[in-house]
Length: 304
Image 1 (tube, helix red, strand yellow):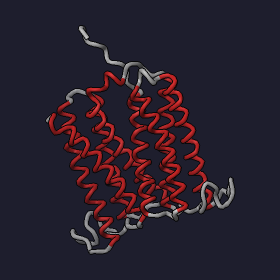
Image 2: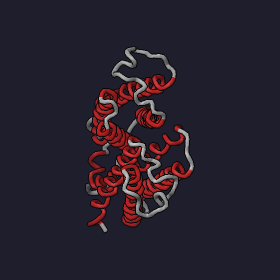
Image 3: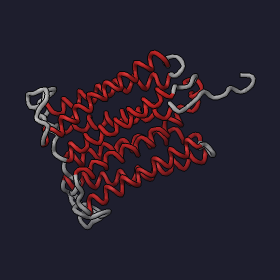
């Protein structure tokens, strides 16, 4: 079991990442109803018609199903191999739970048309599912290095700051998904200005897009604060949090720039997918910081 655990961990994260990208592709190409209102069939058939929309939507369903099987096997193997480990058990349940939730929400969105606010939740739940699998993967890969990385505790103030910023980031992600599902991505047709103004009229699609931009800007500042604090206080004793804080700040800068390029490129497909990829990785890293902030140094065994 140990021989296959790490490769399966990496594979599970990769397939969940592909699910995220496939979901973004469905939204970008308006292929959500490529299979009509049928689920799990596609327009009443197991093998869909050869139209672009039906192939994209059906491929997304197929990848999600395969990912569910792989993640299920991975979670069970972890549960058995690390028997009694509460962190493993919680992460396995967390990931599987949100895979089921996002699948049910995706099916219901096909069968019963949903509002933009509800559709935006689909990406949010998918992101939580990915993060659960991602964290379990990192647990498996870093298990032997944890003692070296965690050489000191974290203050309650910094821990609460990390968790607060991550929860806020989830809100920004939801707002970004809401922007896409309301067709407001070009509400601000230029960048960094919005309709040629620093502050546009806060109504309609321009208002929605502008609020999302403000939320993203604040997230940059908050993650800058996390990185500076980690550099000053935890660079030596908490290499995990220090490295993750630097990576988070770099990723949020890339995310903001990709958002600007997204607008300037008039919502080009590849730019849209890249934008979704970056936020997926960023949120996963932030969740990693949350989990690691709860850990304390392990008591050294006698003789070590």
